[in-house]
Length: 382
Image (tube, rainbow, N blue to C red):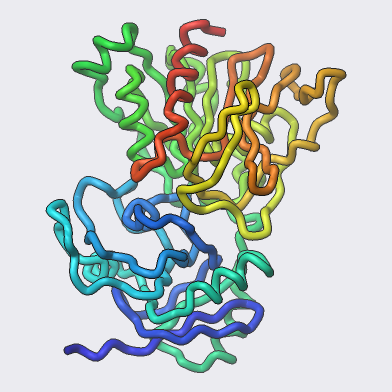
C-alpha cells in the first residue's frame, strides 16, 4: 500500500490539526468553513461559491459513492482544499466513474483526512470561520501560522469575476415537456457570478431559457437585449466588494423582472440601498430550516453563504416593510436556527430573491416553487 505523506491544517488562531494527505500534494490557503451535508460532496467541491475556501465536511465518511460526469456544478473543482475524517478508498455506485482521491488529484486540489472534524467544526462554530492552510510540504506549524496570518481574508474579497464565464453563452433550449407544460417560453439574461449548472437545468425545466453573461456585463447590454427577465446567480466572496454586480442590478431594477439566489440575493439587497454583514460561521449544508412567512410553512433548504443581508439596513413603514430605494419591500423568508433574513420581495417593482438554493441538486427540493414565482413575475411584466 502506498504511504501517504503527512499533512497539516493550521487555523489563524494557532490551532493545528494533523492528518494524512489524499488527492494532490502541495499547499493551499483559504477560509476554513464547514458543511453539514451528509451527501453531495461532488456538488460541494464544484460549486463556485466555495472558491477561496477550505471546506470541512462534518459527516465522517466522504467519497463512498465516488464521482461521476453528471453531478459537477461547474467545469472544475472550486474549493481551495478539502478536509474529511475519512476518505473512502472504494467507490460503490453504479453511477461512479472514479474515486474522490483520484478526482482531487486530477484537479490538483489538496485533501487532508484523519482530522477530528467534530473538534474542527466546534472550533469554527465557537470562534467563527478563519483563514487557514492545508500543507503537505511544510510540517512546521509556526512557519505556516505566520503565513496564514499574512494571507488575505474573505471580507473585501471580490471573487465573482474569478469564477465567471468570460464570454456569453446560451445554456440550451427549452424543449419537450417543459415547453409544452409551461406554456410560453421565457428568455432571461443570467448574470454568472459563479452560477451552478443545476440552476440552469431547473430554469429550463420551468420553461425558462437563458443566455449567461459574464459577471461584469454592463446593465445597458442586458437592458437592450429584449430579455423577459434577469437572473442574479450565486457566487463567492464579499457581496459589498462586487461593485459591478450591485451597479448593474441597481440600473435594472424596475426595467425588467429580477430574481436572485444567494449572492444574487445579497446584491439585490445592496442595490435596494440595504447592507450586508459577514456571519460568524455562515450556513453551509442541506438541512437548514427556513420559514416561508406568508404561509408559515417550514422548508428544509440547502445553503452556502458566509454573508447575509441585514434586515435592519432599511427604515420600516407602519406595516413593517423595508423602505428601499425602489419602494417598499417585504421580507418573505427567515432562518429558524438564527433568524437570518432568507428572502425579500419588492412591492412596487418585480424583483425578489432568496438567500438559499432552491435548485439543490442533491436535495432537498422543498423550494422549487420559487422558479414558478419567477415565471409569474415575468408573466405580469414590469
